[in-house]
Length: 136
Image 1 (tube, rainbow, N blue to C red):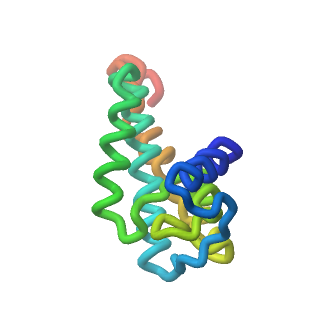
Image 2 (cartoon, rainbow, N blue to C red):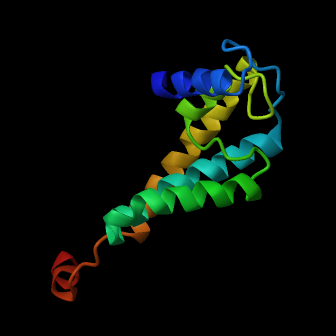
């Protein structure tokens, strides 16, 4: 969170904007919340699938996923509570009003939990047939 906020303030300085801002960008409603659930689900699932199959690829998998999710989600894919909090201190197109944060964060956490549940089932190591027969 601290890194995200610091990066946001630095970006403001680089673009010669007021360094300290509070966002007034409205981001609320079912469409936005569903978009954040989808964004966080996809991000966490991408990371977990990367861990299972190609851990060395996770950095570019995350970059590619976030780039794509920016375009296919109605919320522009915050996907992460730390990012949402950092964007609350930017009164630009990228921002989010602080009052809209709780619902975004809840949607992101729910999306992450759903991704962990699905990945735990879908990406589990297959059990050898002998173990499956012995368990019966």
